[in-house]
Image (cartoon, rainbow, N blue to C red; front, side, top):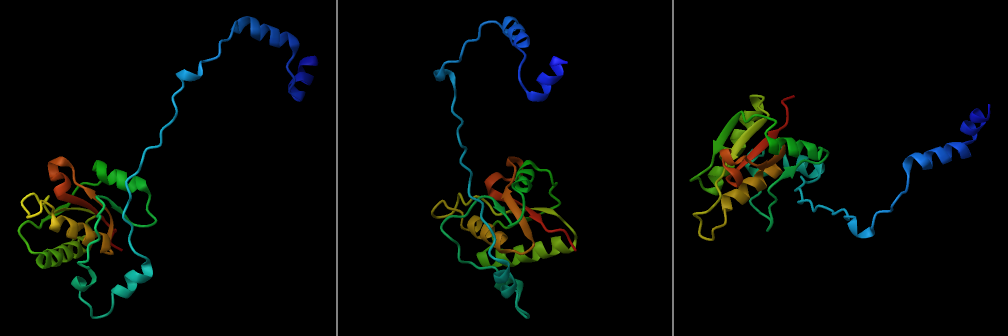
Length: 189
């Protein structure tokens, strides 16, 4: 009956405490120098799409899709993009190749205007066909004057503006690495 009272009140019976100390033995505290402090891993910034009100105002009646995509490129373009409201797990799955690439577009050798039109048409056709994951090859820009890929920056900027694009990231090395982008599209509704 005494044991029932001890379990209800939460007090430890002295006999049980003595038995525990005898079975455990002597206890030594760990030295403070043996501990490793946790480190915070810095995350890369993810480029976010503009507000929905701005997107709908850009899609005016009678305007061509090429009018929507701006050529004004900010100084820094992120390698990854994730639309607002999506889990970072989506981007992680895209990097790992969870979605198989269903079609690809190669923009090598095109001017920026031609590339924008080709990209717009390609994304529209892919959406109409119900494709979810596509590959856009833009090149790394190694042969450009400054050694900086202008088409790479423009393509990623256009992808971030396009309403059908949910996410994009660098392609796998076998598919072109940083010279190509794997793009996740919205499901056809």
